[in-house]
Length: 616
Image 1 (tube, one colour):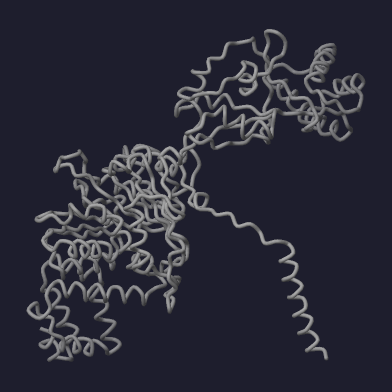
Image 2 (cartoon, rainbow, N blue to C red; image 1 turned 120 degrees about the horizontal axis):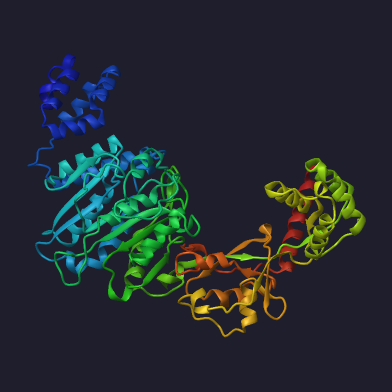
């Protein structure tokens, strides 16, 4: 056909357009996403269209000469070269091939025995498939291990050209039962009633979902997840929720419920962003408490074309092997890189086959080493507990304080003068005693000179304390209220926790209740500026932690009793985070001072020698 078009060079653009319009509707849609007619116009304007068509006319691509598999491999190589050439934006839709190979290994290697069975049918989905590299690499892995396997791949992407490339790849390889769809995965799911055996993806890093929020807010849940969603400025975890919704049901020994596996690339944000109760933490909690998270692999920096940040591969499954149940494996691959001879955008490093095989082997072995660690699920959970300390106020009447107060409450001049006569202008370190005296002084004044009634009087008293007091650590704690002596039910206060043996007095003070006489307890007012939070591991009881980590440093601190009435077992908010750096941090002691001094002295001598060469 190209030879026929080439035969009429004056009308080559019109003939080529008519030729394309002669294809079936599904193929024409692919050309439309490529905006091929505009490309034809550009080439015609540049007087290059004839030369391009002439070159293709000389290549014999007939199926008898180039089969579908070979054509697919050629197409993949062209896609790789195109993306590497366009490295300034390629990271938006192209994942480095060696990263994909690692992901595919982590995803499929554990199922090698199953995947090599004769006649097996496998379904794979990439909800943000870009140009289809992950789907292609997955097919290559399975083809290399089992030529008889039937692989059905499914993908979706909202970038029109990326979709067109992926759909073309599928068309060229002849996958009739597979599908590539165009559209926004988060709000327009083309596979709404489907489940898949394997899912893998590289969702956009740090891209907001503001445009989708209005639609998603109307839903009763997000693909079966009823919890809090992540912040609007990063929707990466939404894609993981979507993928989890595509899990095949799992039941041991039931072929109709085989379960699924997921591999997904994230930056560091989904590991730790958001405190207890935030959307990100709640999603991590949902995943870990369902025991879906199997492993996380930290990749080297400078691996992607348009970003140098560190990235992580998460592996999830709803059919963990028995020895993996209740455990999460962390693998540190950050130092397993090889420098590239020529950088491509921000990509200056790559993973060679040795590094890929080492990481894959560590994942399969589930062993402990300097680069592989295994933790119980609960290790990454914590309770966010409020720790309070008493407010300590010093009282003093000064001219500046009087001016401030009387600017607000000029009608109380006589009251202020009476208080000054009684208490003087010296400093008082017990606000509780001072306030009792102030109240008695004001009560003795005529009614029109004292505190007003109702809300105005409350405001006058509040303004008085603000004007004449300031925080002083040497002052006595401010009493908030007094309580009758009560019996404390520790099991009800700290449900499900094994608490240390404590005297009643010690437990009371831990809860901010201090003995004041035989049958009275005093509760101090908390200083809002000294309020702090402790993230207490789920595996520890709150009381023991506070006694060990808080009380030795701030003896007057107590546990905020309001957290004892919250959800999550009655003690604070539960959160989950995975701090990779903390788990693999290796302390490097500083060099001896003598060594540093000697090095500085050598540098100084070299500088002086250079200066002498210039001045002499």
